[in-house]
Image 1 (cartoon, rainbow, N blue to C red):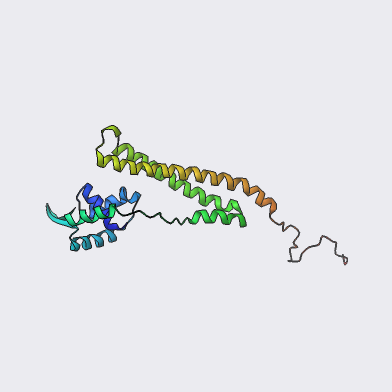
Image 2: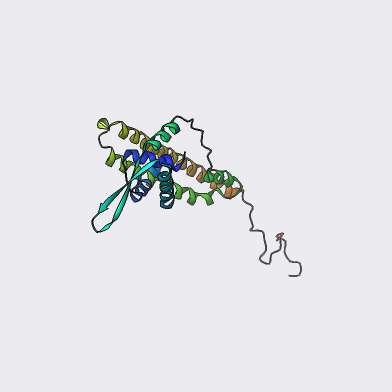
Length: 207
């Protein structure tokens, strides 16, 4: 998937300016495809050159004219062709999961604050999604086709966050169970002398 396809979807749902598109990516499209404002403006210029989108100058009182973009026929054709392409399974790179496995060779308790931080972030995102669902889809039985498909994507995000939070709770429980075992298995340094010798525990024969 290219950024062009995400932009086409957004413009088919509702034409808008570059600023409005960037706001949509910050709020809703960003749930499944992220892009910086600079990337969006750069791709919009390329799509306009390729004829995928059309531009209308809209006058504004006291401000410069606004460029409003909408999907053009070549863009619709490109999107239809992309829709029919097979979707390859995505390769997952999960640094936190590797760190969790690495905790077996260190102190498992040391990873607890980081996992808690991740959990807080996912809990906040879940709350954001649930708020958006209540705001945008208060009556699911009355949705049209476009809204139903938007809602099903949002529901996928909600379920993913719930699954991730449940998994992180499992990770935290496991780390906390292992932490006492790791502490007990750690070599004691109580026999080390203050001057750095190994300290055998025998008295100094010189007194």
